[in-house]
Length: 112
Ligand SMILES: [Zn+2]
Image (cartoon, rainbow, N blue to C red; front, side, top):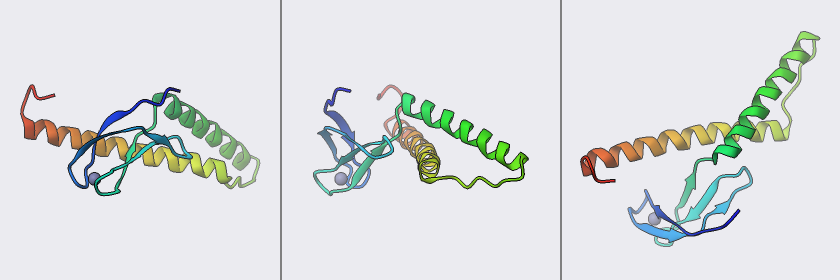
């Protein structure tokens, strides 16, 4: 995947800066604001979200199949990481939507 610089708005100090995102362990894109050192995190790409959702559904099947046979399948490290990633992604996207909505309302119609 090409690593290209993108324009990022920092919610902490309100500055827009250009930077190349790094990928975190779970596949999130992360940038550090050069002005206030705050972390700016982006939601997962569609491919990651799809894979994680697929894995979560698969884990659900395994869990209930084990339960049906009278076993309790505790989630492993990777399963837990995937679930944490999905929850984090959901929150980020909700937050991003709220930020965009607030900006849209503030700037008025037709301003991006
Ligand atoms: Zn900042």
